Every structure is written in structure tokens, then in C-alpha cells.
Image (cartoon, rainbow, N blue to C red; front, side):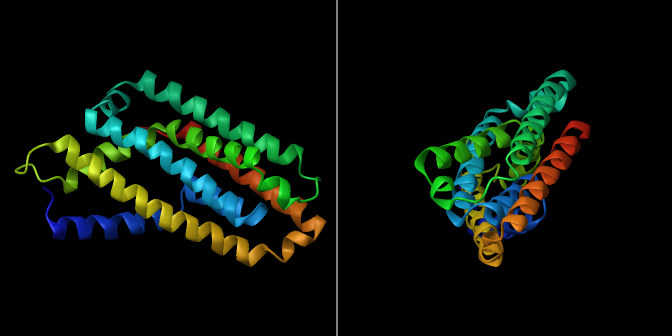
Length: 209
């Protein structure tokens, strides 16, 4: 199996990578600011559920398809970009609606946030390529069962992601909870969320393998 020293190095590397600004943690940040702590955590869980797909793909070698096929990469990339732009449109469309945390924390709304996070993550082909490049660096080729080792590393990465992203969302919500009571501030936050999502969508659409 994987040596303990390698696992500890992997945990440290994963922690730093989760902290680095990216589409996923920025989205969690905006959820914490504009909605609630629970919304940020549920969004995080949705994003991390998507990592299960990427980990499995990397372990089975499916990610190689994205790395070698420009068409496959572009199809998934553009679908993901369009989805981000759609979410941005929704945030902008309802920018003037007053904040109602009882609605935002309802079961149906939380399910939607989970699904959005999941779709956002699996429609980013760069995550699959990242996993394919990142996980094997910590695999012990002498220990055998490489796919299982990669799955274990993927699970560790998911746990680190849940911890870091949830913390980011909770911290963002704590800082903004007083501001949310001001309708004009809520409008600005929704516009900011929309702007961030548009920027992320464009960035994804212009990304290269």
C-alpha cells in the first residue's frame, strides 16, 4: 500500500491545492456570502460528489480520452461553460429578490444546490486531467493494485476538499451575515455572483488541455 510519509505529503499538497483560488472554491465562497452556511456546505458536498467521477475516471484510465481527444475535451468544456453562464443568468435575473434563508435552506433548494455543484464539477474536463496527472505521483508502483491506490488518494483529496471548502463557505457567511440584512447589499452580492460565474464560464470555455 501507500507509505505513510507519501500519504502525509499528499494531504499537505491537497490542502494547499484546495486553498488555491479556483472555480469550485470561489463558487462555494459566493454561496456562503449570498445564501447561508448550509448552502455553502451542501454545494461543497455536490462538488465533491463530482470528484468521485473524476477519481474513478483517472483510476480506470478514462481521463486519457480527454487528454488525447481534443473533440471530447471541447464538448465537455463548452457544455460546462454554458452551464456556468446559465447559473450566472439565474443569479442576475433574481438579483432584486429579498433574501429569504428559510427558502434557501429548504430541502428542495438544498437539493438544487447539491445538483448544481455536482454538474459544475463533472463538466470540467480539466479536473479529470488534473487527477490523471496528480494522483499517480503518489502511487507506490511496487505495492500493486494501482487503481485502488488512486481511489484511496481520491477519497483523501475529497475529504480535504470538504473540510477546506466548507470552512471557506462558513467563514464567508460569518463575514457577510450582517450585510445580508440590507436589500441593496444583497442585490450587489447577486450581481457579484453572476459576474464571477460569467468570468469562470468564459475562463473554462477558453481553457486548453
